[in-house]
Image 1: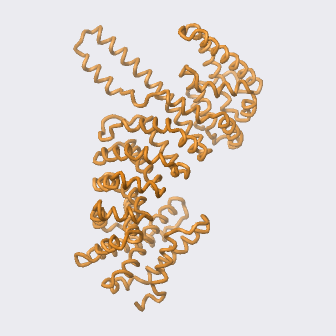
Image 2: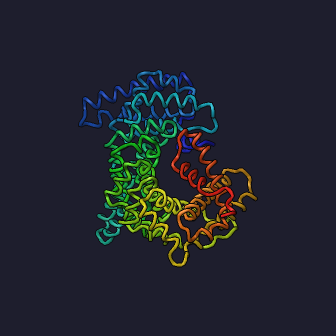
Image 3: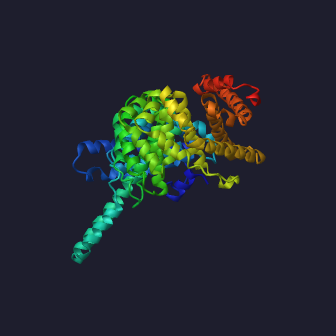
Length: 534
């Protein structure tokens, strides 16, 4: 059973007498339009007397309960769109003063836009409904709806502590306080669910129209501030209590929308998120977290990584002194891999950040401290950590960035690391090389073309390419190490030739010539084809 059908039936929100039909929908929309207009007039005439419009709102909620049945009949969406008073009433109802009514409408729209695996032909109708809703400013209306709710005020733990403090008070007062606390919990839980539905609807729309959602949210500075304020208050340096789902959703939405080019091009967004993201990452860098908290932290890292694809944002990060914070987070340990991935984005194609990383932030020592932690991995693929692979990929990307994009002084200081202590780091680099070479051989024997196999092979090959590229650069720049590397030069060149072909295919698909493509090409021109003679 699909999630949409299961939700409707479990919550008993759809009436049992009949399935939604065109005549029934026509009647329901006419009733809804009439009740909605009547309720608005009553609210205007008696703004300070809720009893005057209480009945019409109960009737309106019952009508919406019936209207929910349309979400199981997508073929009727066209009639809904063409029913001007009904459709406009639904859009206007998102801003209704009653949260019960507005949240019911948001919930109906959210369910209507969910894809139903049991009815694949519904996709065309769903997209048609979405386009009509977007023309009616759906995203702007949902943002306004969401901002009605304060985030994170519900704190069940604090409520229980307060009850405990009142334990010695008179029994009657204690019971009253308990009833009040339970009432507060119930109200806040309902509001939390209503807010969550709004967030979920935005995510659903994003799946269909990512560029439209991103453009709308990025231009809505008030809503962005609401999201940032929502997650900034969280105390991530504690493992006590669960992460509020809506606080988590604030970060998740930002992590989603920054994946689009229009978000990365926003001049203000990075300035808005940099400080709160780094404050939380610094606060939580030494804490062991629950799975939800880890996802929260990872989303913060992903936000920074995506926005650092914009070269201008790298300058902002440097001027704010944030590179030092990232190095500190990498040093702490729990989120070393994610911190290193952000540093990787910062160093890529930027001489200024590479030089700062080495000269001012003293990051080179931390980078090679991680490099020297290498321990021989088991050939058994089950013991081969993908987390370690991702960390290694970022590690080698950082070292290569310093060699290719840094100034001559930065390059020299980086290369010197492989000469010091009797070439100890070259021995470790050979260990990396052999480990990943054997992993490729092992995976090739198990080839099954599954998605999991392809992803694993792609990850390991990407690291092996970077190691070969680093060996080639050392062979070119450090004469004293040429003799040691010569033995591996044929496989290094062969590996780089494969890498060059892959980059060439990517360039043809994207119609852009990458920086890395040119770098590999230049190195292949230097390393002789008959490498055995060197």
